[in-house]
Image (cartoon, rainbow, N blue to C red; front, side):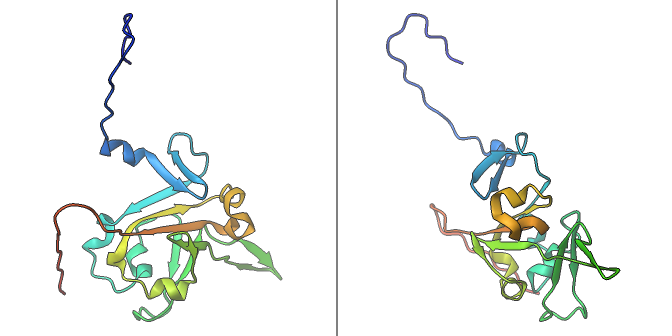
Length: 166
């Protein structure tokens, strides 16, 4: 708030605040503050799995996002993981089946097998929409939850090189 006090001309300069970015969530139709978001959302940044020695995104997400169940049948790096948000989704013939969430990488719908081929070090952030409110944004495909993956982009400034070896 800036008092006008009878002035006819004001020069105002806005400063960016990187701490406020933690309060913003990217959803299908734009961004919202976490406070105003009605759905259940979990956010994971690159720092969570950069230091983990994993070979695919399924392994990188295991145990990181609450209520995101990841099944890797034999533990092999090439095995395509199955994803499930919050347990069983339908009951058919007395058996409970699990519906797979919608997976978006930079806004493009991908399958778990394509996701398995991505390098975990290329990920900037992951948002998991865990409730039925995602259906309002993504249609019936979002009824089992939505995994939104944003990849890293080039940045301005001095070149920076990171190297990890295992």
